[in-house]
Length: 168
Picture (cartoon, rainbow, N blue to C red):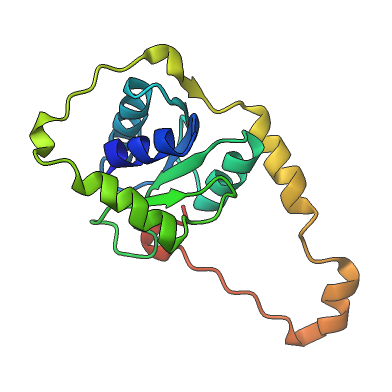
């Protein structure tokens, strides 16, 4: 999937990607491997160094002006599973049309075991620490105001779900 995504990015002028992961089994390893494949293809890969929620990945793609993003997560599925979600330069999940193009590049790989990659470690970069505080600052602009809470009164309801652990 990552090799096909890299081919798509190169074909469309993409040159950088942000990669995040959650608490699923082997997520950090899959994220690192994705960064290595991107670096092998000459694409700069910003790699988070710790568990990162999907909304932060979306923010990071825009913040770093990256061409795309990957988050290794199975989202709301049980913790035994893992998955791979791709985001466009706008920080939103990739459109169905662009996803179809990426899949066409993936389908061109006839022998998955023949894909070899020697990474260019100079192209694998940590996500800047400043991103965390800038994300919190942007997020704080979206919080409910005291006036809004008072207006809703007892009718205000909030729900949280740990979504099988990925909300951690």
